[in-house]
Image 1 (cartoon, rainbow over the protein chains, first blue to last red):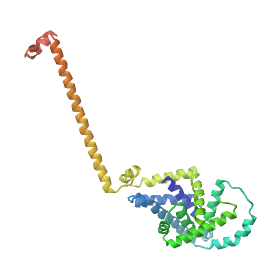
Image 2: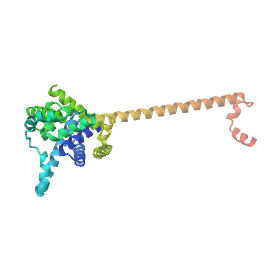
Image 3: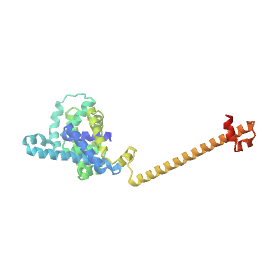
Image 4: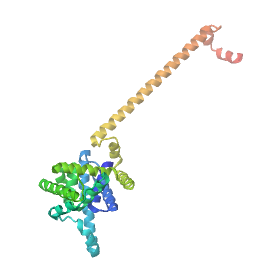
Length: 178
Length: 123
């Protein structure tokens, strides 16, 4: 559970970009799992926890949306991470050639690489990030990922493919070679 | 490098990030986990800490086995106690026999009714 909770925290941080809020989200998700699903067989718990976590993240955004409806000033700052699946890939592809040519070759250490990857993850659309993290980081299969995300397996494959493509372009533009 | 390889490499980097989380964050997460576990009924918690989350029927079977084990242990202790007591008695009888044989008085003297009074008077 210790490893899972750390990854869960990172999932939440990439989504909400706020460590304090991410900690609250993970805590809420753990409490929900413990209170409602403690009697489930152990093998069912990881995907269940992921589903609860993703729902808790969405609830966080819903609450923020309602709050920002009351405070128009806040709404302009928060709207960037809503679930609009804008085509980041197209804009990135359009920019990449020129950008890469201007970036000097730099040797980045592991810590810097991780920081760049985390920043890149925060930039890609929420659904792509969710699919990428569940499929490749949590090592769920396509069916499990689709079940947690509440979408089709085809959508998971598309989201994953676009996420990896977008991340590679962003990282290349920052001089990160994998 | 194909999509899967890139994804794998990215995931390994992310693992590195998780392994080097700030200690305050790790502490808060630890605290949150314990708070969540405190909401799990005690029966379930015992089984989780034992390594597996069993069904209720398994739990009952385990309880039954534990009770049977405890009863067998108690019987074994009682038998061992009885055996020890018996051995003590045998030793005591052997010692009395040895004293009787080595005594100057004949054995009949010990069986006489007034022997106890005589013994007290001589002391």
